Image 1 (cartoon, rainbow, N blue to C red):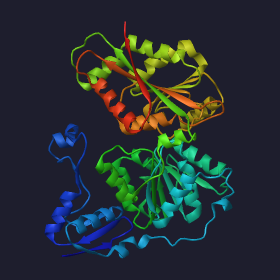
Image 2: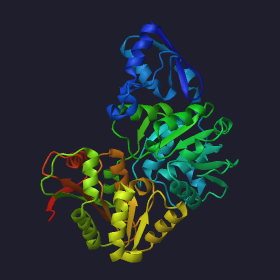
Image 3: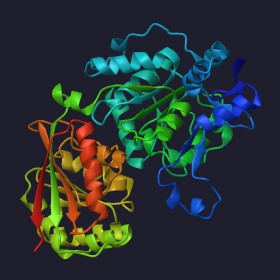
Image 4: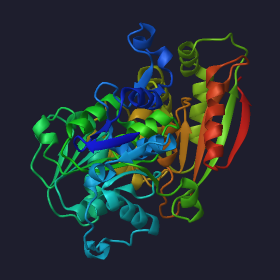
Length: 466
């Protein structure tokens, strides 16, 4: 049997096949969403808890999944045609010398390799950890293609940081920064949050020749789909992420929208080469008096309001040398309590950052701590776990437990950049043993699995709360 694919636009292709094979493709490209059973739409039976990447009605699927459709058909003995039509986005390589950019430093070998891989087809999902220099790779790609480009980032802080990075690399053209209700200016390069860009008119989205999704793992799935599916004429698509969440559906959605995964380098390789700071982890288990088994939310409410636990966190922070980043999850329930306690002791050396902190004030904190010592940033995960570039972070404290692979690895990345006099970083991973089957102790096991996978060194210590 013959199967033919054809390009619909720069996002989708169509698979011409009989109904039987279409049903097989529909099932093959279906995935159960993790924790779907806890979602209201599933509980109310409006949704079956699955994501379907192939439409049985239209026979459409993302172009980025072409290699998987090819493999699926060939394994079943089907003749596969039309590949050249679909990969018609292949970019004609042009002469380009990175030295002509007059960068303030030489790009590293792995950055050049990632750049060269991405320009082969103009579609790539670059998997590169924090402090590996993703912004430089993006900059080289933007200068290579030299077309109207939009760079989509998850936070307002990253809009400012990406713009500043480009200027530091020597870019002297206007850059349009959008993270509120500002209009989209006709600049060669636009840097915007995905929240703002998702509200842009269709004709604005279609006007860009190149789209870069930085920290692509943080995009809400429906918003990311909405943006990139509307960019029907945008052939050059580059996704950058430091972390995937480990699920197949997450990876295939991103590959479908951007392109195949290219692992640039690992965090351990960066440490071994001396590019980033060495990491040591103390997994601290706080032993509580025996508690009855609780729901997850009740357990979290108990922990964040526990005065002995919060005193332990504060005393730990006071004992540390250098700059410390303390990350918490709940602003009202936990952040305000820790802030009140720490401010009595630390005064002006404490900087409190949460969702309500203005982007200008966040940038001011970042800039101040870069030049200071023995300061503490008390920040919510949402504001400081991803993308914020502060070289002078010597310690990180996980004040709130989490099993999220992405959140944990991204948070660790906040402290891995090297600075003058700083070659190492210490992570204090706080967890709790309630002397019963408890959620947060199980989350520690998940994090230890991550540390083992990443080849991070760690020690486990226990303390009795009294």
